[in-house]
Image (cartoon, rainbow, N blue to C red; front, side, top):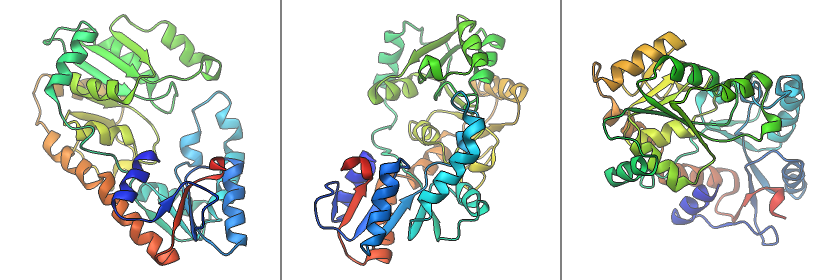
Length: 323
């Protein structure tokens, strides 16, 4: 949200995060009850509402402990929120198809969340700093991923790959409070191999160092609405290997922009080939896909959407939690 705000201001959008200012259009990004009531109040006052649909039932499943049990209720709630929008924004064609499948009839526009590609650009100095920080030899190959400790994110497959490939060092960046982690993932983490490093949550600056310091970004997630970390890795111009799931089908071509795997055996085989330079390097093509989703370009698209729903009016950006 902070990145989008900065890009929107640079694009000349008259935007505020102060709920007490005058505005004619509300752009809501989250689904807390306060956001729902913020959007509802705006509708009652005749203001336009742009609702950003970042979440789906599918990416809620297989996450926190008990998430599958409450997923149907979660779907009803997000539908209640999203349908307040005069326009619904969602990151990809895939997430648009999911929302349409729920029965939502409002206009749904796919628009990437975007990233600041300059922020994540390749920097060999950061590669050196990262390896020095973790005391890893330059010749040692590193495979990394980023995500919460969710089954949906593919952490179990990542741990298994680390066991099968002891000749490489694996990093999983991200953290989930212990009480929210399902038992099978707790056990897998507790018995993970010595070549797997789990630094937990780190700053954006450290993540950039990691992207530059690794040799392969392997993202085994089973469900995404876009996959922002994939965009970050592409912007850093490192090889990317992802699970072959529908969310990528409209914008990342297999064996042209990235490599895709369907199961753990294919992940293992492709990872080895990439790291040993036995297959084509796709990083330049992948970098172009990141450039196409740069936050500045997305801000221009958002500006046109705002003009469509509220002419040239001032935009309130955020949600009910800003009150």
